Length: 419
Ligand code: EPU
Image (cartoon, rainbow, N blue to C red; front, side, top):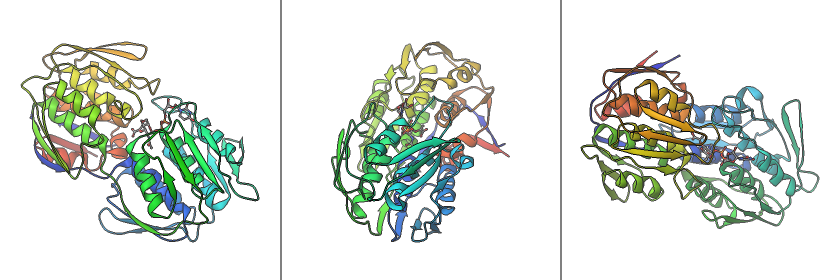
């Protein structure tokens, strides 16, 4: 298993381009299942999760064509195997996103029920309930969700989700685009990735209004056609490099990205004492001599994202003062704390609160990555720590950060992958 060796202590400096958003690309690849005409996508990030999703839809009969560095086209004419097997779902929970599109286009689906996850139980009953409201017959047997749309296909419905769920909203929106009549999703996720998916579906001929608000209306159409769609920039990758620059006392300019979806993160970095210059498609951050501690509380968009919680815990580890990090989305998303403590951080966990008191220096050590964003926090900590940090199990990082050692290298960091 690959490891990452980081020699800490160099302030990041320079410019890098941000990749396409993993969490927008994953549902949009599934949207390709909804039409028999080709979907051409650009700015698709080269990530492990993306290749897993491409393999998954390929074994369903979709023809995937690599169109250069970040281009992919999907041809779902031959879709004949509506199955998401356990072997794939267990490596990537986002595989559940095929359920809605398969039911809508193929009338049936067999998708392995995702098990628990390192960061929380993450059940999918809201996806199932919503599809049942649209008339699907669903039962779980031998670890698989068996879903059938019934003779007349799915029917529009009013769905109120119990909590804000990102992939739940996406699954139901994709199911509704081909359902008969109108579907209204109340308490919908407002995440920018939901909006990017809606934009792609509209380009394919879907009738959707309200994406980006908590009420999404979808009027079902007979069929969708082919389209071309660029994947939005990854706001979490952007935020992660901003934190890395902030923590190391550096100055970076991130291009091919936008601050439009990063208000909560940018505000906290300003509170921490950073200077930030926003251009239309670039962000520049200059770190202060020492960061000030900033408290954060995660909540659905537009509030502070849970996917940036670990990175803010890392920057607070070396900031002046104390901060409270409150996680409200996932019940077990503090696993990076014990690894940060191995690097010399002062963190106390009390249920879903972490009290972090900044120390002058972290010291390099061997640590273990436990999930994607936890790994990102360890990279940030390793970049500021004195001496060498060895991060084990970095396959988690490869799921969500394209070319991380190359990008950090471009910013002057001393990072080496050990194979
Ligand atoms: N939930 C339920 N039942 C459901 C659905 C969700 O109880 O049927 C709960 C979850 O257990 C969680 C909360 O609702 O406590 C919110 O979960 P949500 O469904 O919004 O999460 P998700 O859709 O599975 C996506 C991202 C995650 C990100 C979360 C929250 C993708 C592919 N994944 O997950 O991204 O943390 O939304 O913003 O879009 C990551 O990229 O590292 C990552 C984990």
